[in-house]
Image (cartoon, rainbow, N blue to C red; front, side, top):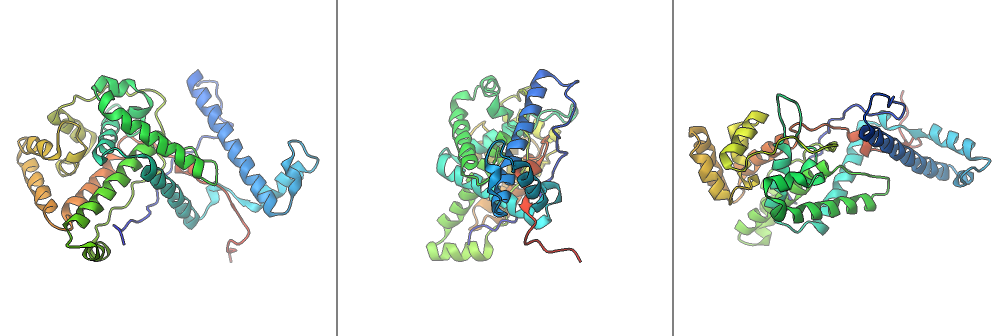
Length: 343
């Protein structure tokens, strides 16, 4: 058994309806809103067609068949809308999306786990707590000028391209219409890559594979996935962080992370190797000195429990900085037939 994970209920934001007035919106915003409406309609058509087929109504396959309106009405009556999905159905659908992302990452992302972590860190640290702008919104990948401004286009562009391929793989493999945000793709590429690295480090310290399996099954560290449902930015974030360890630490602290969080996330910093970054952190103040020493000592143990759990908590917090969520756009209606009836 691998490191245990638990599916957490992801936060969900208000969903934009197709009937919203576009009068006060910019042209770019209108295009985004209209695209969302088109996507919603396409998803609706798929589910209505599936449900109509389930009911044995084949006449809805024609564009304007004489029985199409009847078929659609019957299908809608038999579908439970997303807003009414029970908790169990939402958890199941969330896990289905995560499994698709995991498969895409496994197949397409070959860059080192630290490259994925660096993208996740830089994307999140664009968050300005006072201005309430920036954050984990995918802009680091969707707007190439951000990486270029940081001077990291050469070192991280491959990771961006591979994560985008993993995203596209997940979308194509889905049985239902799915359009992942790049923000989610970055976060979960980093999550699955570092999770695999953590498992590998435990296995490498075990005497043999049998011992490793016993350790993972009995003492594996809990590393639950971060919440799902981030929305992508529609424009590049305003200010790029300064690429020094001290400046990134200050930025992270200003965004709401603690010294313990930041120390645990040293592997995410693009300013040097892990030990080099930790040694720079150690000189900042006594708090950082304490946490760095604790993390290094924990990594020397077989299970690395303190370090891996502290990293997990810090990464989950990092991945939500400034993020806006709408997880329901990943959900789909389900047939009412077979659901338990209320007493």
